[in-house]
Image (cartoon, rainbow, N blue to C red; front, side):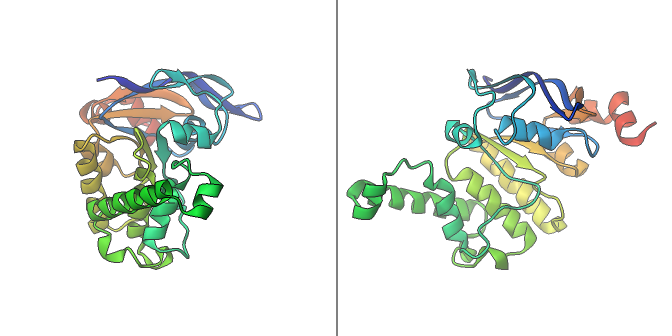
Length: 252
């Protein structure tokens, strides 16, 4: 498998405190990789650095072999990395379909004049976007809710919609920040099934998750952070039996 994402000695400090300390990791094309660690381990900070929300203090981030360190988030998204957040970010007063269509708008490269004149190329892009949105709705089992306002969806359905928005631009890598947090068990299984299905179709995922059952079930490889350092990496079985991981979580 080819390397899709790589961090090299990635570090981030806030007012002299190290949130990330020389983190080295790789995500290979076609994987579902888990990222775990106790609260405050630096997981979301790592995601924020990779996706350009905050700049790293030092180190490098490579995506498909290209150095993307310090690029703004919209440029990183255009290169093929999308994400979700711990706190859901939706357009709550728009419909499910409208949320999906907005998620792809900046990737279409349309001109203002073209939009005003509604040229054939604009019509073609709109048609393709709607087709893609309908495919995603079917994959996520949300097609019956396409005209429902996002604010009226259950929390789990909103999580699925946010994943759908991340999928709209056909990204190479989707980064999910706690996709099953606060979701009921039935929808957790639904989210897991959808991620597996999408992965079988070729989608690569990098996932932060506190639910250990979800991580152990979904991921063939897991990376563990503690106090900003990578302390372990391996299969679910290796991680479960790793003494450093047990100590980080339970202080044993």
